[in-house]
Length: 497
Image 1 (cartoon, one colour):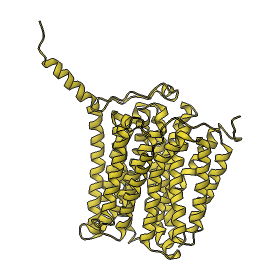
Image 2 (image 1 turned 45 degrees about the horizontal axis):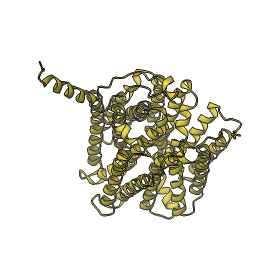
Image 3 (image 1 turned 90 degrees about the vertical axis):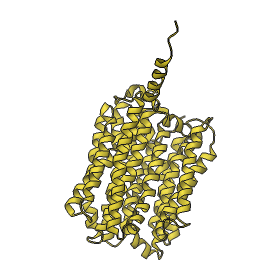
Image 4 (image 1 turned 120 degrees about the horizontal axis):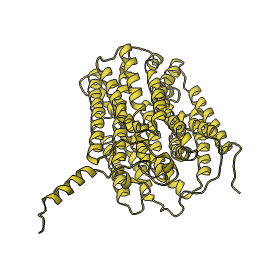
């Protein structure tokens, strides 16, 4: 008999479980900045130690995206999901009740790892199991969980910093994780492993673990070390090399764990990856660096409230994503998002530190930009492949997005303090780089579409969810160029009499 919980098969309960499981850590990742000095003081540790702890938690988040795919192939997925939520509760309680830096870091690391495990284990089944009519709601939920939570973080962190406390926030997170566990049990519906005959790819897991750990270690050390130092530059470059090695290894593997070759050989997924990476990296300079300048003028709560329009932008774009998900406009949405993101960065760049009015306008624009880029680009990539690959697509895009977002942030912060002679000039340079990433990413995506001969089209959700094939046709990468070259060669050949 298949074991089922009393709420198994009910979409509202399953969706609520996903939201409660994903939001806490993603909100903490942007809320922890203002309260880090308070945590360091109460746990009698240094800011550098906590920086390293946050870096390792982010690395664990990146590693979990690939680990979840491997575990899903050989183990019963719903049972593993319950285990992930149990570990999330344990990690949250450890962090909230921490009496030492080691205890806090261990709990926070578990939070990061389990959040990404749950993202890959829970969101694709939610998207595929309830038919086309619920897919729009799932897209809105995913966008809100990832980007809505992140944009809400600074305000939450400001509230806690204003109260000179941090444990209440972490206990609330632990309570939310416990509620997610209850819903995971109530919605439990036993399911077999995805593919027990799939290879156990230990090399891919090692590369996926070693790359982010090394890169994020180097990035976290930038708080107290120079960029070209042995403790920073070597692990940064080494970690990036391992991540590139993972991509190359999976591209060439006969039976890969990740669908790298399929994605990188197709036009629309490549364009989606480019936009997701550039948007994640560019948005860092827009919010975090300008907020650090404003922190010298206003309280943490005041700064957090100035960036609250980001949340409104994320909510708006999540709703828009749901409305256009099954329309041709979905493929235009990431490009529009890059335009909004570039506009937001340009508004911040008008005056440094930005005025309150410029901050409100800039944060609203960047919130719209970030929400309209990564999640829509992810779905564009996912619909370009058969539904059975959706879990792997999510894993690849989220791994690369996490590396771009979490690694670039400390690098930009370091440059803002060390380049240009003062933080204001350094922040201005970083904003120009972010603006270049936004504009360049949009231009690169358009060029990829043109060179591949891709055309925006509405997705066939019935065929996609029914396992009949991709939601739309994505031509091979550079297909238009290759076709033109083949035509030219045929035209140049002499006609035989």
